Length: 135
Image (cartoon, rainbow, N blue to C red; front, top):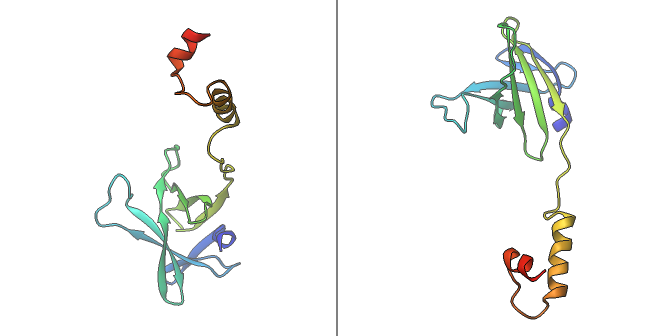
């Protein structure tokens, strides 16, 4: 599904359609936007149903007055940027690379925790200040 969101979406009837994949999108407008939820959002049109995909967050980059750029993400972690041409209403969507997710604590913090348990295995562990005074 995510791979089908990339490409060029051109006006077709009352939505934007990717002629290569057949995916249809629609841009909706909120009546009461908030700082967390911007004014525009993206819908997937599927068999006359409209499914919410994501909010469209405006990008701060300087752009020509004939286009607007946005970023959005969908469940599963895929991130996209899109550019809407305000004259032709063509939407170009590009997937952005995502960073690999970490597994919690870093290796160095795990080593420090292990060293602390070796030096003070049974007693109350001293604070950082107390350790400095001991060394």
